[in-house]
Length: 297
Image (tube, rainbow, N blue to C red):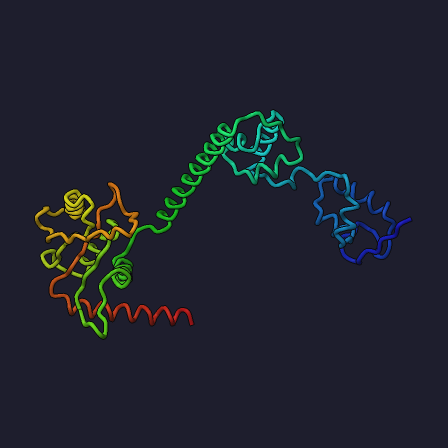
């Protein structure tokens, strides 16, 4: 007769601490399980704190329904097993359900493998369709994350825009060097949203529109006229307001990836008489760095 030593504790249901036979403990454990007790409550009630022994006591006894956590993939798992039993391969199941092959493998690996009756071309097509399905799912998740992040940001205060603009300029704007003192506020970027945020920041600082100049820089192989009109429309200025475009010569040894209809070059945004503004930006940024180090201390 197996004896199990139990720890003394409260809530043992009238059982004395010390030793008890395995058979008597199992009888009690099963009875408690059927009453709807969780493993933790059974452990505490019987004073059995050894997981191996507890597993043996409850061996073969199913858990109560209320302890089973709902799994969002249960339906997918059941469907995957059904399709596998119909003879479908991992590729075809992936196409049907849009889930990963690794998940499918975990769900159906105990089922018999179907016989393969397809050509290499058919296999390639199935794989391609499965990958497209995966990419579509990823894109949906990507867009959902972006939308959630936009909601988290909410409205932007003037002070927040001010701080954003300082960091934006110091990351993307022209900076003076000890060996080349050029205290001019010049910002260059190809991202239209970045340019609009920067121009709004200049307006927040009280920079008059007539002090701001715009110039396009673009590879000579690009659609120069189309890019000029694109930036003029974005800025809501007349095309003639832009300064003369700077054309960049293409190096034949370089393989450029910024090509096609979406390539519109970079816009150079310059502020006239901006030495004082540049010094203020440098001072603002220096203090931001000081504050960041303070917060990190």
